[in-house]
Length: 323
Image (cartoon, rainbow, N blue to C red; front, side, top):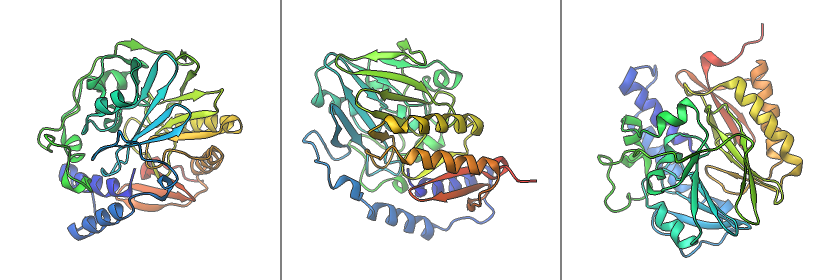
């Protein structure tokens, strides 16, 4: 997830509530988009082979044993969904923005029955849910509300020219892009073990970013899918649905798992990360909540705490101060 999105949200803030004291100019926004697009492809993908199922919207890479990363590189979220294969079943962990036909990609990759599970219910992770019949979800107020679909200014912004490095897929426009409703067909429990045949995934509750945030753990392979609780980039912790105390507990929990892990699979930017980073993320966030870390303004009302390989974006009024 790029800083460009933060810039655009500040513009939205001007439009919706007039809250930005130092508005960004159109030239600044254009420069940011140029910078974002110029960084593609990310160097981390150089060691991965682009699969033949890729198209003009999705890039597909084999990133682990039976694990496909389905990447949307030309939209500012740079969201990554994961198809996780067992011998008998498959899990699609997130479905992206809903701007492309992710179902068609999945059909090319497997003939197994597929169940969608979302890392959480933000719009860039549930957009393609409507294309699938089987959707398993934890049951929180947030996850249930989001299953009804969304059609607001922020949804439209995801399909705007400012958000893109390439044209939208054929037939998709900013005007007709919405988050379509979908039906949760099964409720999954925290701690539930999903037996895919030759692969068992454990559902871990990691609230904080949202109340319905989960991770998936393949203990035997040492794989952990982190959703938006960790990715290489600015980690968003400023939304109304974010709870910083819960996030602290969750990231500390994930950090304790790191010695038994081989690979992390985050939901944005880069698909394969060394699990040791979780220890640094947890330690850094603990310091943030202690009030001992310094930050810089990202935009009016939001501060960035910058570290090597990641950062945190927090609301200014939520940052603890040392007495």
